[in-house]
Figure 1: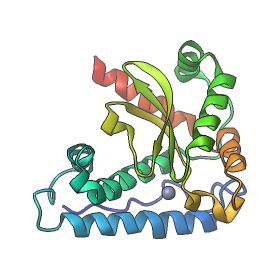
Figure 2: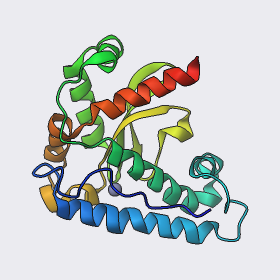
Figure 3: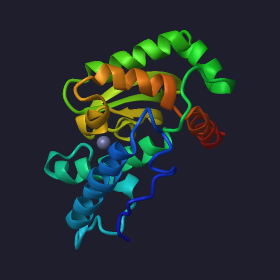
Figure 4: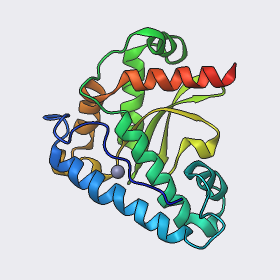
Length: 203
Ligand code: ZN
């Protein structure tokens, strides 16, 4: 069973003017697609060939000799997750996720500040995340293809801060991209669903 490039969960122009169709065309159709192709080439005729994406990520995360396979499979997972985190939305959430942000992170303003800091201070390529870590919300960042699954954390939200995520729309202005993401592009319904799925698993 080969890894697949899932279609974007929205039309390419659905996030205009905050994220352009051009960015999504390159980011999904070229970058994400390239990780899928490379990962499939790497697992062909190996014991990883019929494993799930998650199993390959967990099996290779701490094995330096499998770094290329980890990088490509984690990037498939991270990008698929990232697309689902996007919609024309953003701003302050409601519901349970808002209550958890209040109790675990000290409120929405604090969350926004901490998330922006993680995303802008990640040196070079990487990702900023909102995760559940031992049952508590936490903001973390990972370099390159790094992924919270490998750290035993549950991903709730992510933003891609590789240059390919924002260069066409924002050039070098990563902070503007991150602020736009927080204010206009977070799909809080998806974040809420991830939180609920985790609770369902725990009971
Ligand atoms: Zn990317």
